[in-house]
Image 1 (spheres, one colour):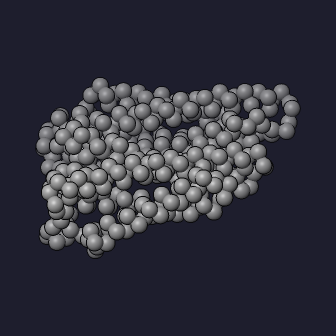
Image 2 (cartoon, rainbow, N blue to C red; image 1 turned 30 degrees about the horizontal axis):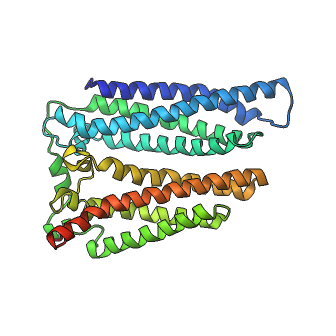
Image 3 (tube, rainbow, N blue to C red; image 1 turned 90 degrees about the vertical axis):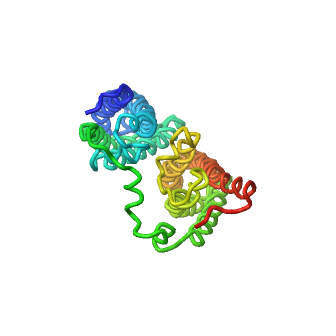
Length: 344
């Protein structure tokens, strides 16, 4: 096992976050069973006080988890390649974890998504004096607890699995997927002539839907349309970036590695690029959930939920514009500088 200080800090933050959510889940379980906002009894008042304390704990846990995730990505991409033989980026580091790395990232991102949704619901709940969404928030906390436990365990297993003696070949992991240069030019049977126009169309459609959902937050159908378009945009954007547009950052063709974008030699562009992509993904479930709350709640709840859904749509629009600028901008600069596109 590697004992890098930053990894130890990540584990410490994960552990504290898990313990905070574990403590809050006791209250969340009681809320799920006994929450009666119309009951003026002492037991209900005591449960309301505990609910406020639990919300503070989960809020701290959410912040710690986000901070630990950012620190983990930085460690994977800029620190651990120096100690893993043969690694040049995060691909080699994950390869040294012998299959535990992708599982670690999957559980962590699922936990982050659920905590982010809880945070958005909690914002609406805090804006209303009657606290109408306490029960929903408690259920989300109970769902987040096992995911955070799995993420913590997976991170520990990945650290234990790291082999610092056996050299890795991270480039081989990428290039071994292709049997010929022509296969490297295509993704799911299609090339840049298909994926780049689809990316452009999906980006324009999703941005327009995000603008409409932001400017008219009380129309739930616009939020549902936005969520549907984002679900299309997310995989298309990832494919367009890793398979085609990243070449303009690397200066070479067919280097389909998302992790190299995080390196200093490429100006750490992976952090804002993939951060914008992740923010788009994180804000989509709140748009759907808050629009459903707005459609079914009282007028006060509907107004607060619609406003937060509109704010999430605005964040999606901003994130997509940032992603598009950072992904497409280097391609336009290359064309203007050299007079050709990188194609082959």
